[in-house]
Image (cartoon, rainbow, N blue to C red; front, side, top):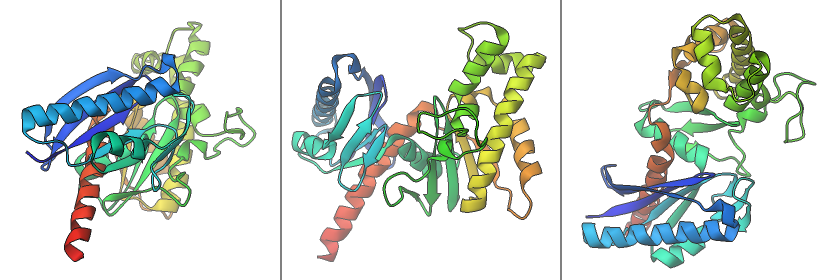
Length: 313
């Protein structure tokens, strides 16, 4: 059975699948990255995992994977297949596409984790059928993916979609990027966790705890939550003014709060738009499988491009 390898590399763990031509997940597996052993060990773990997935395909599906798609965090040069930098994995300038292609004996597509997850949400998830969408992941930081006609725009230098570093509070909280007042310093899951821990006096409290307190009517939690929602709405209106998406997909840990987030967020965005067309604002649908599914789409896209090139020549 013709299939591809899909591999989603996170800060601490890896999710993988063998994906059929119809998008079916024929086999799934997870492993740790082993980042505590250093960046070389992480690369070895990725290569070993990919090789084992290839072997599984040969044994159970009768042939090796025709291609592989890999999503990684940090700065990614997708055109040259280089994992440029990832703070949480410690690597720099890893020629990951070449290393994997040599190990697998098959073509490999390399993608940025959020853009790859956004690709899946746009094609087979919450944005299915939308010709223009913006996917925003509210996690430790905030990142986005700009979807146009079934693909995700990486930008001239691979930085497209970095909505978390739009300044929404000039002169505000310093951000590690070097600016002050970036969106992710106010509206990420990490920022809400920090603000709620300070407000309630419990250093272990997090954004999920804050959401529960909001739902129960705690006024301090409501204040913290509305501060985050207001900042997020400001950032999103800036994005939709520039991009005019048909669908705005919100994912990541903060989106797990459901309507505790989406009801006030939709209201806040609605009150801010003037001439802009209000997009549909929806929760992400694929959860933590988005990156893996997107990696599979990258692999199939690569094969289709290769097949088309061979036919034309």
